[in-house]
Image (cartoon, rainbow, N blue to C red):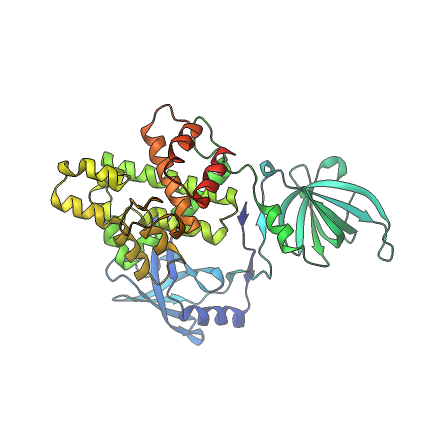
Length: 441
C-alpha cells in the first residue's frame, strides 16, 4: 500500500511562472542529469520570462561540471514539479537555463489516496441503485479495491462482470472488508477503463467514509510475516521500503553535515557490509512491524528509515562497535577495546540524537528514539538509565527490531518464537509486549 500523487502536464505560461516563483523560496530544487544519474542541488536566483531564461546556482561549489548545450531536468520542491531544460550559459557556479514551454505538475488532492495490489485482498461490497430518485437496489457486487480515499475509490470488475456497472450509475457502499457501513454511502461511477482483462471503475462518494472505518480498512493485516528466506515476507512491501531507502540515502548525503559522515562508509570492507545489511533489515522489520501495529503512517515510515540510517552514525569509522548490543556486553568486551573505542561506543546514542537535533528537516521524535536506542526497561541501559515508563512507543519498536535483526544475522537456525521467548524476559513493558505480540501474529 502506498500513497501516490497524480500528475498532469501544464503548458500555461502563468501557471508555470507561479510555480517557478514559489520554487525560488525553496532550497530543495535539483538538476537531474539522466545520462550520468546525477542529482545536483541548486537554488533559483532569478527568473527572466521575457528573455525565456532562468538563472540558477549550485549549492555545492566545484562538485559538478555543466556545459553549454547540456540537456537535463529541473526538479522543483514546489508542487513536486519538473521540466526538461538546456544550459544556455555558464559563469562560475551560476548557470542560465531555458524557460520551459511545459511543466509536469503534481495535482494537489484534497484527500490522501491509498493504493493496493491484488495480494492485499482489499474488498468492498457495493449495490447498484436503480435510479436517482429511488433507493431500491439491484444486484450487489463484492469487488477488489485498487485505490481509495475518504471521498472515492477505484474498483476492479472481472471480465465476466465488466458490463454490470457503467459511468453515471449510482451505487451504495455497504461494506468495506469486515466493516459494515450503516447507513450506506451513496456514490456515482465517474469513469470506466480497461484494466488487466477486466475493467476499472472510479466512484465518487457523496459523503466521506468515516475516518475510523477508513483508517482500519487501509491497514494491511498480513504485512509482517516471517519466511525461511527473508524476514519480511511481503515482497512488494520490501520493494517499497527499499525504494524509500534509496530516496532517504540521497536526501541524507545532500546534507552538508552528513556528507563527510557517509563518506566514511566503505562498502568494500566486510565490516561495512555488516552495517549495510544491518540497516536494510532494520528498515524492513521496523516498517513491517510498525505498520502491522498501526503505529506507522507514510510519514512515520520515513521517520523510521531516518532513524535506521543514523542510529549507528558514531560507529561508521569503527563498525565493529555497532555489533555491541548493550552496556552489559560492552563491559565484557571493553578490555579488548582501546580507550578511544570505549569512548566512541558510549557516545553513540548522544551523537546520533545530536545529528537529528541539528537537522532542521528532521522528523518529530527521532532525537528521542536515537537517545533511547541503548536504554533498557530495568534501567541498565545508557546514557541515562531510564526505566519502562519513560520509553516512547517507537523507541520500543526500534529496540525490539534492532535486537531481532542482530539475532537473525548471528543465528543460523533462528526462530521468531525463540527470539520472543528469550527477549521478553528483559524487554518488559506494555509497548514492548505489543511489539512482541505483533511478531507472534
